[in-house]
Image 1 (cartoon, rainbow, N blue to C red):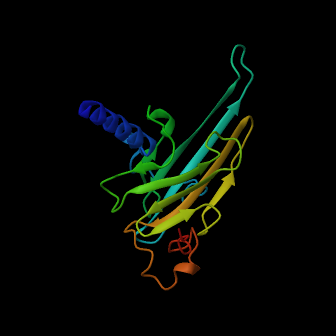
Image 2: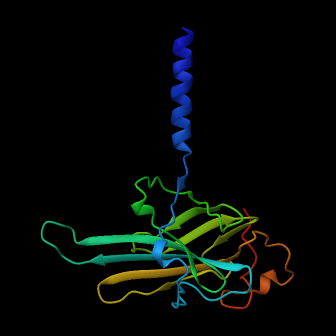
Length: 193
């Protein structure tokens, strides 16, 4: 009887751990690490200590015999204050895309970055993301974070960006509410939970 009880507890613990599993994303920047991003739809240079987290969604729809002709996906990026690429993440290539939260742990970040909500990742629909980092929660359409339609020809694209304090502390600056992405400082106050 005790064995069955133990077996049931182990099975239940296994199910619960899978239900709350986080998808940790691996850095795919490799040879592109340190490359400066010039597309201001993905990154604008920030002041010292203020970095940018971005998402690029894309979808192509071309009729192909035997196929629906639709291919789409999304990549996430971390850029430093000079828009040099520090991290590139592709949830679809991880082989364990269990959905949000996506967790990014890097030695160049003081805190874990947790992508808590995502929309439009397939390139169709309105792109959106929110993430937690340090003492803040940042999201598109808040904090002066934005998404821009970059579609062309048969490709639907959206590019989103949101600046954040790399030290994780958004409370030390009295002008925090006045900042906007692309200024010399980071954008407005973090969204409350």
